[in-house]
Amino acid sequence: MTARTEKMSVIDYVAHNFTWGRFFFWMGLLVFVTSVVFPFYWMFASSFKSGAEIAGRAPVWVPGEWRLDAYQQLFNPDWDRFQNFGQNVVNSVKVAVPTSILAVVLSTLGAYAIVRLKFKGKNFMLNSILMIYLFPGVLLIIPLFAMLAQVSRWTGIEIQDNLAILVLTYLAQTLPVAMYMLSNYFRTIPNEIEQAALIDGCSRFDVIWRIVLPLAVPALVSVGIYTFMIAWNEFLYAFVFLNSHELFTIPIKINTIFNDPSPQMNVVMAASTVMTLPIVILFFGLQRYLSEGLSAGGVKG
Image 1 (cartoon, rainbow, N blue to C red):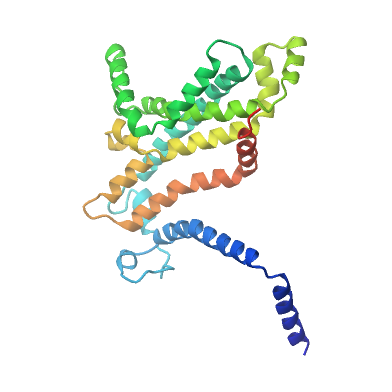
Image 2: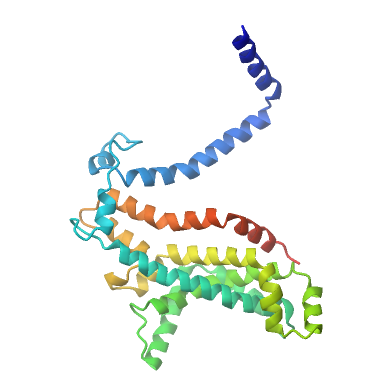
């Protein structure tokens, strides 16, 4: 009798609090979460499946056996059709980390100059930088390649198969939006604090180092993660500037595995999983700074 009463009380509670607005809200949230989480689960689960499970007509939601064959092929030199994927991970790190660091440093100085210093053409400069970001990368790659080719003729620096040159091309994509994000954030920092420090004898760089940077940590982390993700996931520029298999970044290597005459989809999924993990770890590890930086950086002063 008690169980029946408890059951009826739960039903009564649901009926009492039920509204169509809440119903559609929770249904929409369920659809959204499923549409976001399920592709990651399918990618992760498929990396442990056999070729027969992936190629079968009926979808296999859970692998019959959690195999490590795909990961062995990526990282084990003794495995058949070894892909040497570890080298590609290192190449991506060599490109993404410097791009992120340089973008944060350069955009910090540039954004601070735009917000705090007075010079002619300041607004035009900011709007021009933002206009560059509005152009898709496929339109910028041809003039950028031609410009770097001219620089190569003058200096003798080879632009093909050069990871340092690839970092410069990524900065052309990331600096505009990084400066725009940081300039909006710097406007939220009271100028009176900096003026007081200048009166006390601090130089402009002391103000940036001791006052602005500690207050702008959330924005700096947001910009760092954003630029890291762009460089980590970028395909087009790496595809144009890299020809050597030893220098391929992760996206190019995944495309190579996928376009193999006899592609193995479980290996593609395993490589995609390895590529996704650092971004997920960074996002969840620095989520607090990321949310603060994006929210504050989106407010104009």
